[in-house]
Length: 592
Image 1 (cartoon, rainbow, N blue to C red):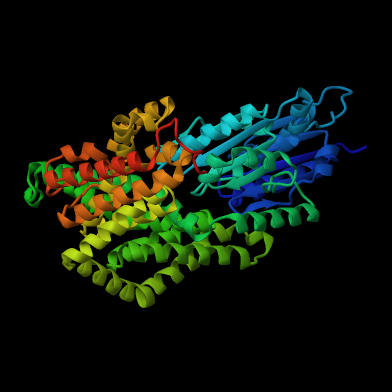
Image 2 (tube, rainbow, N blue to C red; image 1 turned 60 degrees about the horizontal axis):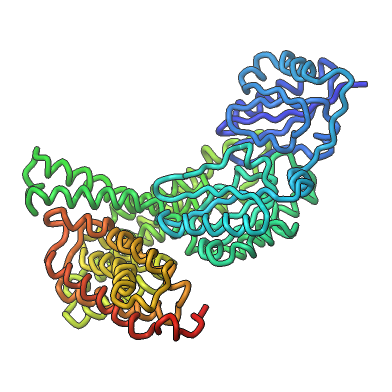
């Protein structure tokens, strides 16, 4: 009876080495009288996917890969791992080594799923990822909320947090393999390829923060979608995956989520560039005009380089969120064209969505013979999508968008006092509506985008208004102590630091407990701060940093008046909270 094996070949691009290794193994197996089925993996996905039946019937598994391959489907099987180069050079050696690893007289053990093992132990193992555009407060609060809910329900849970500083508490391959389900609480793009074959529930950061138990129940219910996996085959499974993807797409917030993904990758570039520009002003507001000086070097790094990358990065990662890697090249090129054509951040947003959806359409609709499929990700999609986006930007979109942006810039630079105050009220109020949520991020993104057009007053209003809610609530806990619990007094101390650092989310614990009183008070206080900042014509050249950036000379114009605006809004917020909240002994049950 012929010996039966299965194999997986994979390289980073999934083109030459992947297929050459597969063919080499097949021919060697045929000559040796073995039965062999080979699955290939690459940037275009999985080809000739191995089914559960294929894996169950195999005596051993050969992995010839230069990149990560999910081992979960092969649990309980003898596995021999090597490289694609070795598979091409000496396939017979690999096949013999794989069979040599099979214990004499051993039968393939029944594969117990991680879920079954966990159930037998009485608890379930869960993993999760939380991510928001800035990766500051919401990310970690959502992670803690999921962990506590899982513990209360008798389950184990590990959560990885992702933000602008990168991933923390990163999940290991072992933890992923053992997990029964995955919960994603994110407002930005999260790479799901690691979770192939796992039940995945996708939700927003807010849902993970406020409804963790519901997400855990859904993840363990058996009704949640399954992430497409290597080592899974069959038409029924393919249809299941397609249906799951459609369901998840319907649940997502679509364009908003793609935009926030772009913003999350753009922010570190903007913050670094803005702070370097601000540092150049330490030597004088015009010092950078003298070539060869440190001020000029700082301006070249911050304004001449970082700020020029702002729009391409925004555009590129909007496209990446939509179409994954195929969208990156046309998105980056479209963003650079938007910068060169003067279309600014508005043009970058448009080019990002164009690039993403064009690349996605090309990926899904171009059909080639199997031996030419490898050309799609490296040649055909980048060429056609970049060409299409580039021509549209140059001949159709760039000119009109530049005119719109120039008109907006002229209006903002020349608007009268009344219009300035109204804009300040609007932006300030938006910063406090959801304290780091979609409305807050929309106002912040608008202000950041205008920095590239040398319009600095909205940025000042937005940062001042974003500092006001936590500072106002911290002040309220001091002047109206009988309105707050001991836990809220402790939260007030932390809110001082968060507010001074321009982390509006510091107000969330108060708003979550008593939203009908706290949120309107914060909106009024932030709107007042924004209005004063615009009235005083305060300008801010750095997009983040809170009180710490105010120490940089010339980073903020009318510094004293800017401080007055922040203090005034803080006092208004505290006063309103003190008035509308009742003493603890008399307070009615808080709304929400």
